[in-house]
Image 1 (tube, rainbow, N blue to C red):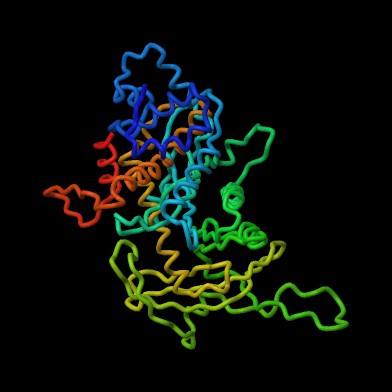
Image 2: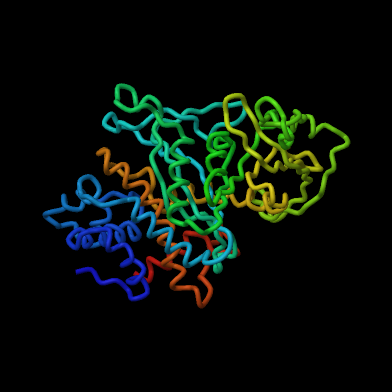
Amino acid sequence: MLTLPSEYLTLIQAFAPVFSQRLWQHIQILVIGAILAPGKRTVTSALRIMGLSQEKHFQNYHRVLNRAVWSSREVSRILLTLLVTTFAAVGDLVMGLDDTIERRRGEKITARGIYRDPVRSSHSHFVKANGLRWLSLMLLVPIPWAHRIWALPFLTTLAPSERYYAGRMRGPKGLTDWARQMLLQVRRWLPTRRIVIVADASFAVLSLLARMQRLANPICMVVRFRLDAARYEPAAPRRPHQQGRTPSKGKRLPTLERVLKDRKTVWKRVTVWHWYGERKRVVEIASGTAVWYHSGMPLVSHRWVLIRDPKGTFKPHALLCTDMTVKPEQILKWFVMRWRVEVTFQEVRTHLGVETQRQWNDWAILRTTPALLGLFSLVTLLAHRLVQRGQLPVRQAAWYVKRLPTFSDALGIVRQHL
């Protein structure tokens, strides 16, 4: 019978109610094996590292992923509760929303598709990737012993392409449809906390932004904004005895492209920390409020923020925030936090074996990659239990000198303690 260290036992036992007693023994072995195993994260590699290479009924461990009945969504809820309680007990909850491609091949993987590779592609060069598209929601919080913000995944869902739905009874769901359902689920889990979602331009969609604004406790969305979007002044209040329908918008405003080129635009210089991997960068911002409108779509009142570099080293871009009361400097601070999402995607590929699993069963595919992403957050929680009273040892090498601990250091101390 597996015996866990006392520092880890209470944390891992929080997930026990989701599984049956018989299944829970297999779950613990797979989780600890996935943490300890180097290289590929297959079921057999987890069994080998746990000393069960001679287990005759090894198929029972495969059935945890491809046949057993348990709720991945309930596991996500418990993980989010642990993360919020540990790292964000008070204040705003800032979350990053982004998609990534898991490169997988195989005729039996029905949900695979061909997508644009966001890492290898550029504005002038288009690269395709064959695999699975995952949409992940991560909690962006400062880690005390790492002295920086980490993106901790807690809810991940598969977002197939339209080709997956060909010949099926149901119609296709777009990326923003999955995003809307995920955000509504998080709002039900955390009905009283203020939630801020930071995302890229793929989620700057009127239907999604308007739905988040209509909630009883609205979710604040911060997204990359189009420079050519149609912006208007708010509609004037209806006059007494006014005939006709109430106008939904006011006078048309210049596009942000024109605002960017207008010499009368007032710019303010601010210092931004951790800008694209740099320690700090001085940028210029301009801000205002407006209404975004497109024919046949709902209105979205917002605060816009234009960002440009005085030295001209990067192209200007714009941000949209659905909460007009937020200051531009705070919006910019939230936007910079979003880049930690890409770091987490790279860490789980390098250290937790995402893209090395070999299951082709639909249930196993739906469960394995979200579990490995969630394992990143679980390892962070386990490391926090060990080092919250001290400093995390930073492993050095002659060819790699670093000042602050990274996820590899957290994973190393957890493995050593196990």
